[in-house]
Amino acid sequence: MKIQGLDYNTQREKLQLPEYGREIQKMIDHAATLPDREERLRCAMTIVRLMETKVPQIRENTNHEQTLWDHLFLMSHGQLDIDWPYDVSEAEKIHTKPQPMALPQAEIRLRHYGRLVAEMIEKLKEMPEGQERDELAQLTANQMKRDLVLWGHGSMDDERVASDLARLTDGIIQLDLDAFSFAPVAIAEEKSSGKKKKKK
Image (cartoon, rainbow, N blue to C red; front, side, top):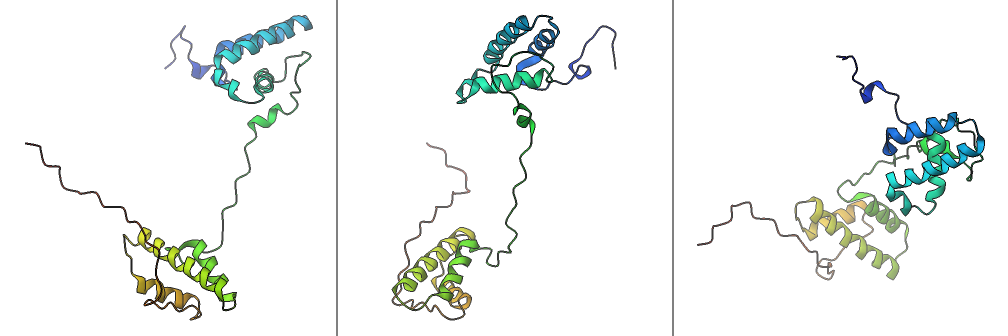
């Protein structure tokens, strides 16, 4: 419904940078119409100082003066003909959206163990026997146990870890559970679901 005499923001021109408000935009539009070049520059410098008060957190940026002049250029739609105190040729890049990041596409075969364990297992299969392989096998087994606790609702089955490790390394790594000691794993205590008793 449109009522005569009422002016809604939805009917006005969309602001380039709404954080500065419509009054600042009007000042910039007015500055662009001033006939004298020096007067336009003085007006622009005053507007930049006002913009800084509108968005004081901008001072936290290392190069906030450059940012303010870039914003002024954008809000003037490039129509403000002045001797710019800063290079505003890169101002348009502010509105450039970054390219979407490519997500890993490789399939994770061991979902509850994750990619890290999968990589460690592949490394174990390539390594020759020796202390270095034994140390990596110990690290891998302990990580697998932590993952089981995290994703298996507190399951701490040492035999399952040993079985999975042997199977996934094609029998290369065989843990002797009588001699092998896992690192202790902290389990967060479950919160009691019952109601608290009232103090008497």
